[in-house]
Image (tube, rainbow, N blue to C red; front, side):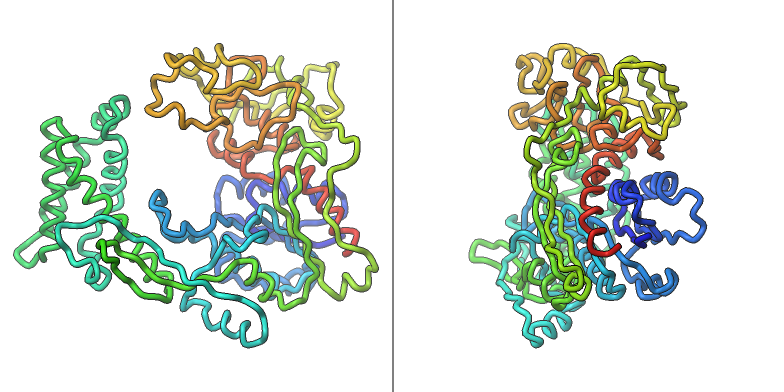
Length: 536
């Protein structure tokens, strides 16, 4: 058996697909989310006593893990999160996506273990130079050493926008040098003020928000007031003055009156967060102000793809390409970028060419009806711990449904979200294959900007086609093709190609999220076969 470990395993879709080949055994996995970890243990680990569960890959000793597994981890698989740096996108809550450092931890595992092969999923960053790392004291020596060894890692000068607001005549150049901890608001208060700023001007959302949060905001602002004294500096006094104006306007039922003061507070707190992220991540660069008073940070960056090619030191033959889940029998159009690497000594001995699968000729695509038609007769439940439902017996099943039922005698996780009367009214009016935009304007009254609603919202699935990419279908409010309800966790899992015996654990929303985040097992199985041809 080929020994494999799964980093950033989620609920286990990638691992499950590898197990379906009958050629692999999973010896360890890393997953930080509690509910996904429980799902993985339930379905992948089961009674395996020597399985190693890694809760956090950061700083983990993979060399020691390799020794525990008899020095023989053959394959490393996983999909490290890779949202990409925001590049000063002011709509982001963070200047830097901390998940990007996890890509480096993934390749640190490859370097320490030196497996025969590795697989990375959903890493579109490896297909272009748009996804970049910033120069940092944390690893700048490593990058410079790779460059000295002859690897090409060209650097680019970037300018990150930290704030385009003015703050009462403050000298923006001095702000990064200040003790900003004194003017950083408690996270709870900062969050409430940020939501308030977003809801001002929204006649539907604002009253509800104020009803729930007005007292809490005023209380938290009062607590900030009590911390001030004669030693408080001008910056702090200015912030308190703005907060007091917001509290007064809220208490008098006119929050809009203090919208400028509120914007000051929220934007200033966002700038503080950006500055602290730059410092805590050790970014190398300088703070500068523009002629118009904007605060920027100048820093060099380098492409993730260049880093990856250099850090592996030419030890692996790699191939990367976009594959579509529906090529492998998944009733869903889901495109993912896959990278497979085979260690050079293994590759050269094989005499084979490394290729990722292409779309088969004469492909018969499975449809939504193929996937979930047989589940219509079973009443959907609402509670996450609902009991499994036994199969009814003889039924007219598609070949795909028969495949999904293998190894099971019942339906698990056939749970859905409760529907409000407003949502139910919309469900009834939306035809198969249509979405929110097909509704009359009178049915869109709870949305402040209905024209900006995504096409995946309130989508009633077309039974005669594969579905679109399954995300968290609870949040998207996907509608059953024939029934006026949201699709269940199990129906979403069927669209992802999880067999019915696969049991999801945790809260209802977590189950939906786990399904949406997963690699479709049938796609994973196809990639596993490619790797097995070189390493078994």
